[in-house]
Length: 225
Image (cartoon, rainbow, N blue to C red; front, side, top):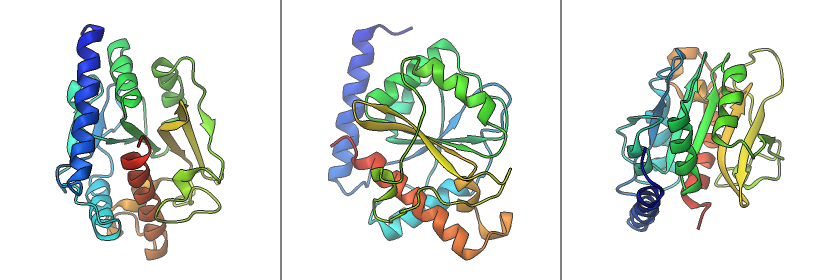
Protein backbone atom coordinates (compact mmCIF):
# COMPACT_ATOMS: atom_id res chain seq x y z
CA UNK A 1 0.00 0.00 0.00
CA UNK A 2 1.29 3.44 -0.87
CA UNK A 3 1.64 6.08 1.80
CA UNK A 4 -0.49 9.20 1.76
CA UNK A 5 2.35 11.46 0.60
CA UNK A 6 2.93 9.38 -2.49
CA UNK A 7 -0.79 9.30 -3.25
CA UNK A 8 -0.99 13.07 -2.97
CA UNK A 9 1.86 13.38 -5.45
CA UNK A 10 0.06 11.06 -7.86
CA UNK A 11 -3.13 13.12 -7.57
CA UNK A 12 -1.21 16.32 -8.22
CA UNK A 13 0.49 14.87 -11.29
CA UNK A 14 -2.91 13.65 -12.56
CA UNK A 15 -4.45 17.09 -12.31
CA UNK A 16 -1.48 18.88 -13.88
CA UNK A 17 -1.27 16.36 -16.71
CA UNK A 18 -4.97 16.53 -17.49
CA UNK A 19 -5.10 20.32 -17.43
CA UNK A 20 -2.00 20.51 -19.64
CA UNK A 21 -3.55 18.11 -22.15
CA UNK A 22 -6.75 20.14 -22.25
CA UNK A 23 -4.78 23.32 -22.89
CA UNK A 24 -3.33 21.57 -25.96
CA UNK A 25 -6.77 20.94 -27.48
CA UNK A 26 -6.99 17.52 -25.80
CA UNK A 27 -4.33 16.12 -28.13
CA UNK A 28 -2.84 14.00 -25.34
CA UNK A 29 -6.08 12.82 -23.80
CA UNK A 30 -7.15 9.20 -23.61
CA UNK A 31 -10.11 7.51 -21.98
CA UNK A 32 -10.16 4.03 -20.52
CA UNK A 33 -12.30 0.98 -19.86
CA UNK A 34 -12.28 -0.34 -16.29
CA UNK A 35 -11.33 -3.97 -15.69
CA UNK A 36 -12.67 -5.37 -12.43
CA UNK A 37 -12.90 -8.66 -10.55
CA UNK A 38 -15.94 -10.74 -9.64
CA UNK A 39 -16.76 -12.45 -12.92
CA UNK A 40 -18.74 -9.70 -14.62
CA UNK A 41 -18.08 -9.09 -18.31
CA UNK A 42 -16.19 -5.81 -17.98
CA UNK A 43 -15.15 -6.21 -21.64
CA UNK A 44 -18.71 -5.96 -23.03
CA UNK A 45 -19.53 -3.55 -25.88
CA UNK A 46 -16.11 -3.49 -27.60
CA UNK A 47 -17.14 -0.94 -30.25
CA UNK A 48 -18.84 1.50 -27.88
CA UNK A 49 -15.96 3.65 -26.63
CA UNK A 50 -14.21 3.98 -30.02
CA UNK A 51 -17.50 5.17 -31.51
CA UNK A 52 -18.06 7.61 -28.66
CA UNK A 53 -14.58 9.07 -29.09
CA UNK A 54 -15.13 9.56 -32.83
CA UNK A 55 -18.46 11.27 -32.14
CA UNK A 56 -16.90 13.59 -29.55
CA UNK A 57 -14.00 14.49 -31.82
CA UNK A 58 -16.44 15.34 -34.60
CA UNK A 59 -19.01 17.19 -32.51
CA UNK A 60 -17.18 18.65 -29.51
CA UNK A 61 -13.95 19.58 -31.26
CA UNK A 62 -11.96 17.29 -28.97
CA UNK A 63 -8.87 15.42 -30.08
CA UNK A 64 -9.11 12.35 -27.91
CA UNK A 65 -7.02 9.36 -28.90
CA UNK A 66 -9.06 6.63 -30.59
CA UNK A 67 -6.96 4.05 -28.80
CA UNK A 68 -8.99 2.89 -25.81
CA UNK A 69 -6.92 1.67 -22.90
CA UNK A 70 -7.92 -0.95 -20.32
CA UNK A 71 -7.12 -0.10 -16.72
CA UNK A 72 -7.52 -2.23 -13.61
CA UNK A 73 -9.35 -0.83 -10.60
CA UNK A 74 -6.29 -0.93 -8.37
CA UNK A 75 -3.75 0.31 -10.89
CA UNK A 76 -2.21 3.75 -10.39
CA UNK A 77 -2.20 4.22 -14.16
CA UNK A 78 -5.90 5.08 -13.81
CA UNK A 79 -4.73 8.60 -12.97
CA UNK A 80 -3.70 9.00 -16.61
CA UNK A 81 -7.34 9.07 -17.73
CA UNK A 82 -9.81 11.87 -16.91
CA UNK A 83 -12.71 9.63 -17.96
CA UNK A 84 -13.09 5.93 -17.16
CA UNK A 85 -16.02 3.83 -18.34
CA UNK A 86 -17.29 0.71 -16.59
CA UNK A 87 -19.90 -1.72 -17.90
CA UNK A 88 -21.07 -5.31 -17.67
CA UNK A 89 -23.98 -7.60 -16.85
CA UNK A 90 -22.82 -9.43 -13.72
CA UNK A 91 -20.86 -9.51 -10.50
CA UNK A 92 -18.45 -6.79 -9.42
CA UNK A 93 -15.96 -6.99 -6.55
CA UNK A 94 -13.55 -4.29 -5.44
CA UNK A 95 -10.88 -5.09 -2.86
CA UNK A 96 -10.19 -2.54 -0.12
CA UNK A 97 -7.10 -1.39 -2.02
CA UNK A 98 -9.03 -1.05 -5.28
CA UNK A 99 -11.81 0.89 -3.57
CA UNK A 100 -9.25 3.27 -2.09
CA UNK A 101 -7.56 3.74 -5.45
CA UNK A 102 -10.87 4.49 -7.17
CA UNK A 103 -11.81 6.93 -4.43
CA UNK A 104 -8.50 8.78 -4.74
CA UNK A 105 -8.91 8.87 -8.50
CA UNK A 106 -12.35 10.47 -8.34
CA UNK A 107 -11.50 12.89 -5.54
CA UNK A 108 -8.41 13.93 -7.47
CA UNK A 109 -10.39 15.02 -10.53
CA UNK A 110 -11.17 11.76 -12.31
CA UNK A 111 -14.65 10.83 -13.51
CA UNK A 112 -16.13 7.33 -13.47
CA UNK A 113 -19.11 6.39 -15.65
CA UNK A 114 -20.79 3.12 -14.68
CA UNK A 115 -23.26 1.82 -17.24
CA UNK A 116 -25.49 -1.08 -16.21
CA UNK A 117 -25.56 -3.38 -19.22
CA UNK A 118 -28.42 -5.23 -17.47
CA UNK A 119 -27.81 -7.26 -14.35
CA UNK A 120 -25.11 -5.18 -12.65
CA UNK A 121 -27.34 -3.16 -10.30
CA UNK A 122 -27.45 -5.46 -7.26
CA UNK A 123 -23.69 -5.90 -7.40
CA UNK A 124 -22.45 -2.37 -8.06
CA UNK A 125 -24.41 -0.58 -5.34
CA UNK A 126 -22.67 -2.26 -2.35
CA UNK A 127 -19.31 -1.88 -4.08
CA UNK A 128 -19.86 1.86 -4.43
CA UNK A 129 -20.43 1.98 -0.67
CA UNK A 130 -16.94 0.55 -0.26
CA UNK A 131 -15.56 3.45 -2.28
CA UNK A 132 -17.70 6.19 -0.72
CA UNK A 133 -19.08 4.91 2.61
CA UNK A 134 -20.22 8.39 3.62
CA UNK A 135 -21.74 9.48 0.30
CA UNK A 136 -25.17 8.42 -0.88
CA UNK A 137 -25.86 7.41 -4.45
CA UNK A 138 -28.49 9.99 -5.38
CA UNK A 139 -30.71 10.33 -8.42
CA UNK A 140 -29.70 13.32 -10.48
CA UNK A 141 -32.42 15.90 -11.22
CA UNK A 142 -33.17 16.82 -14.81
CA UNK A 143 -31.66 20.25 -14.08
CA UNK A 144 -28.20 18.81 -13.40
CA UNK A 145 -25.51 20.29 -15.69
CA UNK A 146 -24.57 16.85 -17.04
CA UNK A 147 -27.83 16.90 -19.01
CA UNK A 148 -27.17 20.38 -20.38
CA UNK A 149 -23.73 20.40 -21.93
CA UNK A 150 -23.28 20.53 -25.71
CA UNK A 151 -26.57 18.67 -26.04
CA UNK A 152 -29.72 19.38 -24.08
CA UNK A 153 -31.67 16.60 -22.40
CA UNK A 154 -34.52 18.40 -20.60
CA UNK A 155 -36.07 15.08 -19.53
CA UNK A 156 -32.83 13.60 -18.27
CA UNK A 157 -31.26 10.34 -19.35
CA UNK A 158 -32.54 8.90 -22.64
CA UNK A 159 -34.01 5.41 -22.80
CA UNK A 160 -32.02 3.23 -25.21
CA UNK A 161 -33.00 -0.35 -24.27
CA UNK A 162 -36.10 -1.49 -22.42
CA UNK A 163 -34.71 -4.09 -19.99
CA UNK A 164 -37.46 -4.32 -17.32
CA UNK A 165 -39.58 -1.52 -18.79
CA UNK A 166 -38.53 0.80 -15.98
CA UNK A 167 -37.67 4.42 -16.62
CA UNK A 168 -34.06 5.28 -17.23
CA UNK A 169 -32.32 6.84 -14.23
CA UNK A 170 -29.00 8.57 -13.65
CA UNK A 171 -27.54 8.26 -10.17
CA UNK A 172 -24.45 10.00 -8.93
CA UNK A 173 -21.88 10.41 -6.21
CA UNK A 174 -21.37 14.11 -5.52
CA UNK A 175 -18.33 15.41 -3.65
CA UNK A 176 -18.01 19.09 -2.76
CA UNK A 177 -20.54 20.01 -5.41
CA UNK A 178 -18.90 18.03 -8.22
CA UNK A 179 -20.33 14.90 -9.76
CA UNK A 180 -17.45 12.42 -9.55
CA UNK A 181 -19.30 9.26 -10.56
CA UNK A 182 -22.43 8.73 -12.63
CA UNK A 183 -24.31 5.43 -12.71
CA UNK A 184 -26.68 5.05 -15.66
CA UNK A 185 -29.43 2.51 -14.98
CA UNK A 186 -32.22 1.05 -17.15
CA UNK A 187 -30.78 2.96 -20.08
CA UNK A 188 -27.86 1.10 -21.68
CA UNK A 189 -25.93 3.99 -23.15
CA UNK A 190 -23.02 1.71 -24.02
CA UNK A 191 -25.19 -0.49 -26.22
CA UNK A 192 -26.36 2.64 -28.01
CA UNK A 193 -22.74 3.60 -28.72
CA UNK A 194 -21.98 0.29 -30.42
CA UNK A 195 -21.88 -0.28 -34.17
CA UNK A 196 -25.40 -0.17 -35.63
CA UNK A 197 -25.47 -3.85 -36.61
CA UNK A 198 -24.62 -5.09 -33.11
CA UNK A 199 -28.01 -4.38 -31.52
CA UNK A 200 -30.05 -3.11 -34.42
CA UNK A 201 -30.88 0.17 -32.68
CA UNK A 202 -32.38 2.94 -34.78
CA UNK A 203 -30.24 5.84 -35.93
CA UNK A 204 -32.31 8.06 -33.63
CA UNK A 205 -31.60 5.94 -30.55
CA UNK A 206 -27.91 5.67 -31.36
CA UNK A 207 -27.67 9.44 -31.81
CA UNK A 208 -29.40 10.02 -28.46
CA UNK A 209 -26.95 7.68 -26.76
CA UNK A 210 -23.91 9.28 -28.39
CA UNK A 211 -25.09 12.80 -27.56
CA UNK A 212 -25.58 11.88 -23.91
CA UNK A 213 -22.18 10.21 -23.90
CA UNK A 214 -20.65 13.37 -25.33
CA UNK A 215 -22.23 15.32 -22.49
CA UNK A 216 -20.55 12.96 -20.02
CA UNK A 217 -17.18 13.48 -21.68
CA UNK A 218 -17.59 17.26 -21.79
CA UNK A 219 -18.63 17.40 -18.14
CA UNK A 220 -15.76 15.15 -17.08
CA UNK A 221 -13.20 17.32 -18.87
CA UNK A 222 -14.45 20.64 -17.54
CA UNK A 223 -16.38 20.21 -14.27
CA UNK A 224 -13.50 20.72 -11.86
CA UNK A 225 -12.29 23.99 -13.45
